[in-house]
Image (cartoon, rainbow, N blue to C red):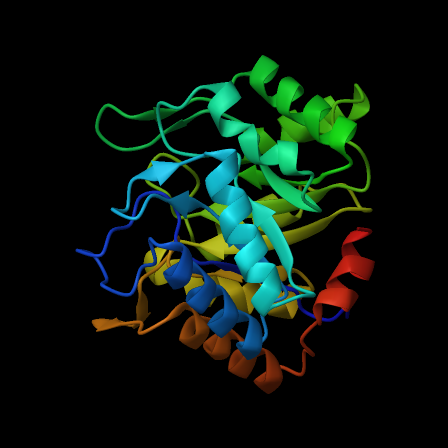
Length: 271
């Protein structure tokens, strides 16, 4: 099997310090969490950014501050900004970090109910626009799929030239409004992929480590971090993103899967 790429989603846009006081807001906190995840084995930092008070932002300037500071501490790590932003942001707001020409960025492949009255909107034209912008900037999209239909959308837009091959998918599983987090759900998504693609799995909450194990066994890659789950185990808050990454590394080693360095991750993903 290929070596295992571990992505650390260190803060997200929804979690707050009231949920877990270790969720980072400031540039300094974000760098600390990124570095802690990196030294434990993460080769990709999936990045949302916040204002110092925790308010989600897609400000290009804030992203640049955070990315530059992360790269100073972890020079070879892959920083993957989110273009998801937060519910209610415009396309123009969400696309700001693409102007920095990162190696990778996320591209959400469909619309999702997001609890209560919130809808995370990604129309077909939005996906096309984001795909074209990423091609123009030479950015590799990580295709975030919250359900099977989003894989079908990505495949269709790939054939039309809005997304380049080979594709890299991220299954985001266990979100209220998306696909569940059981093994059958994982297999359904995995068996729907084009044969030349790669994939990573992000299980929310209690699904994080069971799905990570399934991905490790099946030759996929893994995402963990405070964006998806704030607990190390049931009832025990994680002290850092690093301890979540370290747990995946231990599982992978028990199962005989080696961990990819950032350079090896670049080779696997074709960056």
